Length: 367
Ligand code: HEM
Image 1 (spheres, rainbow, N blue to C red):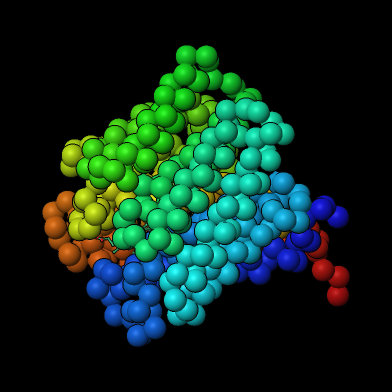
Image 2 (cartoon, protein in one colour; image 1 turned 90 degrees about the vertical axis):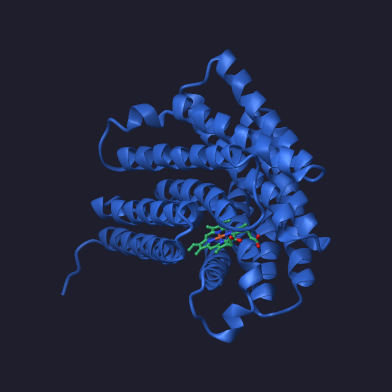
């Protein structure tokens, strides 16, 4: 057995992460005006932390702990999921923020260990992503308005994904010039996030430009441009990646065209969910068949129906962003509800694939 937790210990952490996703989704729907019972309505302001920290923080922390293969690495997902559970249980937000901040400090520590093991641009990018998460959580812990943590959380997720794509591109390494452009995009993003704490408008405007540059870089450099011509799972993954990069670019364009990120209202909703839902979840859909086998030791055999949640995610997000653009409340509300349906369809589809994989492994039954 590895020096980490056995697979059986990883399941409750994933269950907590998904509880956080569903609670966060319901809290987001409350903010779009959908009726929910009182305990959910009271969680409305915790939507961002539940999604960014309770779900993504825990899942990313778990994935890194498995790769690190040290017991202490599991403290990251343990603490962030405990923070999410505290928030869902209605404990004071400060307690949840403290647990999550401690979890992100552990993720940063494990990312630094990775960087020291392998001094590469991708491990540096992953560590900088973890640093963004910690700094964003400290804003939340300090009681500052949630929107001040948002550029940091965007940095966390965008850099984590960019770092992982860079790692996978080692088969087809980018040229020296392309690496320089990547480093420039990284520097712009980090500078912009830091600047947003001093000058919100100018800092977030630069953040939008950095996101656009990174999206163009990924579209051009990612091996997905080739694998999209293949078939089956490689093609599905490539389509997830390329469409996801489109959402990252769109978010950058919306922010730049608006002269910076608003901190509430339709522009905020569109820019935030183009990146956090369109880009990040396209990556989740595409990477789940590769990551779940590593984390849970189960196969996720590909099936053509994997396209259903992906198409629903894109179409519902288009409806939502169009609703933001035309200030059409019902489009926005229905787009948001269908976003939720897309995520549920993805979870159910993945469970069905895992069960199919287990049945195939067990072989035909003898009676
Ligand atoms: C079913 C999916 C989702 C729905 C219905 C939803 C809904 C919302 C709404 C209505 C807002 C408020 C926007 C405004 O102030 O105008 C919001 C903000 C936010 N959302 Fe989502 N969202 C969803 C998915 C996500 C995902 C996947 C993330 C990933 C991290 C996310 C992160 C955030 C963040 C960080 C904020 C800002 C929080 C704040 O300012 O309090 N959302 N969301």
